[in-house]
Length: 357
Image 1 (tube, rainbow, N blue to C red):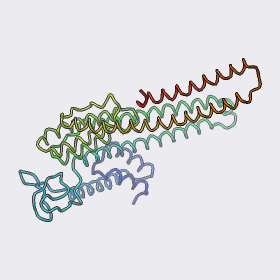
Image 2: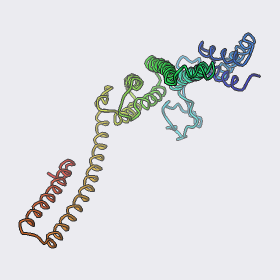
Image 3: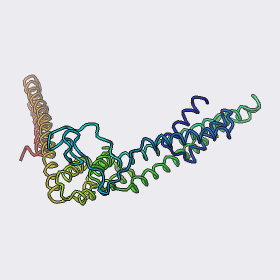
Image 4: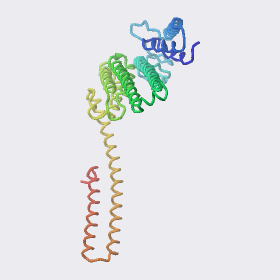
């Protein structure tokens, strides 16, 4: 009905069934720019929004009337099964097509909506910046050659640079606004009560808590706090379920291995699980140490080869030299000192890696 670009913006805005003020403003500006009648456009937009909301309502899962909640049963034998189980303990039937966990999916949707709004606002800002630069260029070119001669090129370039700096600062403020909102969403998101929701949400939080770049930013700190909050809730809710606690602790262990040292004690771990995690870290440290020793041995082999070549060259030099005995003695002492330094380096490499005592 409208231009494809406008249609694409409308579809993106109503996708989640909610139309924010920012989205309305962007759509209105686009519609005006394309010559659309605003009243007619608003009627059509509201119709699209209501249609999308009805679709979402029809597709939403029906709430259970049971005061005990939904009981998961094996589709093969009908036996009750644990929510975290991947197969039936009675008949061994493997479960497939398990529904997405609601809490993690809800948080993901909120973050996706935030990312979409951020993209729209940054795109709008980029369009404004391009328009302002275009207007400035046109203004500087007004009046023909005489006007351009009176205005120096350096002044024009300075004006353009200033405009770009101002627009870049606006873009940084937009980035900061959405970064602060993302942190707020993470911190304020409610922690669920069911085991499957908790485990899935913990997995999501732990995977986002650190990106292995050596720096923990404010967004990652928010994820770390949420990871701690979820894990402590799991320890309470799943107090009698050792398997669930061990599974959650395994996720925590994986995160701790990746985190920089100041953040490794970001959560309190029960003694039994802490022992398991420490053993895992100890094994990894041992493997890392063995790898370092191998690397050290390879380095020492190269130094030994260098020393052997040096000794050989020294022998050749002493055999071939035709000079006074004093000069030959000086050359020998210098060569021996060089070989001594090589072997001292080899000893240092061994000592650093626990090979030489």
